[in-house]
Each structure stands twice: as C-alpha cells, then as structure tokens.
Amino acid sequence: MGAVLSVLAAFAARRARTLARTGAIAASVVGTISLAAGWSWGALLLSMFVSATALSRLGQREKAERVGSTVEKGGERDATQVLANGGVYAAAALGSLLVPSPMWYAIGAGALAASAADTWATEVGTLAGGDPISIVSGRRVAAGTSGGISLVGTVAGIGGAVFIGTAVAVVHWPVPFIAVAIGGVAGALADSLLGATVQARRWCERCGEPTERLVHTCGTPTRHAGGLVGFDNDAVNAVCSGVGALVALLLS
Image (cartoon, rainbow, N blue to C red; front, side, top):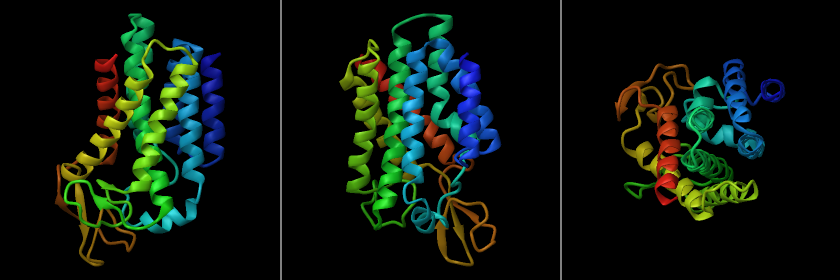
C-alpha cells in the first residue's frame, strides 16, 4: 500500500513539474521505505514535501529571475536532490524496520527538520528579494549565492524547523520538540557555513559573474573558482541533513 501511494504521489508531483523523471523515481523509493516504517513516517515526509513544494511554487517566476544565473539547478528536482534532502530520513526509516530503536526517530526527525529549515530559508529569503550577506564575511553577495543569509530567510528557516518539530509532536514520536527544532536550525546553519567555505564555486569569464553552474546562462562554460571540486549544493544539503540528525540524536 505504501508503494502504491508513493508512486501515485510521485506521479502527481511529476505532472505538476516539481519533480524530474529521476526525481519521481527516487521519491517513490524514499516514500515506500518511509511508509513501510509506519504511517507516521509517511505523514511527516508528506508534510515536508508539501510545504517545500508550496514554497517553491510561490513567486516561482520572480525567484527564477533573481537566482537563475547563479544556482546550478532549479525547477524540477532530480534524483540527487531528492536523495540529498530525504536520504538520511529514508535510511532512518529503514533502520527502524530492521533494528527497532528510539534513536531512529531522533535521526529521522532531525534530518527532516534540517531539510525543511534549509528549504524554507532559501525559498522565503529569495522571494523576499534584496541581496543577502555572506555568513562568513558579512559582505553583500548576489541572491542565490550559497552561504548567503538574510533576516527574513533566517526567520523562515527557524519556522521550518519548528514546523517539523510540531509535526513530530503531533504524531507522538519519542523525540523532544526542542531537540528537533535545534537540530533543524543547526543543520541549516551548517549548510550556510559549508556553502560559503568549501562548496565548489565557479566563474563566468564572459559575464564576469560568480555562479554554481557548469555552463552559465549566457552559454559560456564556467571555470572552477574556489571550494572543493565536486562538492556541490547537493553534497552540502546531504551534510545539512546529517548534521540535523546528529544534533537531534545527541539532544534526545
């Protein structure tokens, strides 16, 4: 039943153009594992997915215009993006099936809260407009630049962590609300720090602009300009989820 529901949800998301074909396949797998672990696992995953989708669709055209030349990916999420944000949660669900333990609830809740906090901060912060500041240098950076933060985005990120913490309390998981909320905020903070320091950065010689894209919107191949080669935004998101899981587990 969980597999059927997951495939139907992924198909609907594919039709709504929020998931690419590979993203729909990955989402079906993640959803099936989560629902197999229990209805509460599926309900929490769905709450995260619905909130993230709603925020991504809000002001979609305006946000694309602001960050389109900077961010590597946009629009439909592919398999890598789905697994970067939901892989740790799915692993926790699988762990609860194979070796039942309260720790899996803390890991899953923290991972999901971190992904929600990061997504809410990015979507709302971008929609609010204005140039964010680097979390490391404090200097103004272009909208969409990894490691850039704003007051509105930060508040939204905290809201995302609190949202998942509240949802976890509603389904009566054995994880303290404060552990989930702090785990989510810690994960989003780690995302910003890694994005500003070790995430791969690129440069378009033709436009003279920083970007994360391999090929800039002008059609010019970009060159590596800093950070770790291959350590892209998806890798940062995966670490963000892992940090949220670890912090929530330790606080639980």
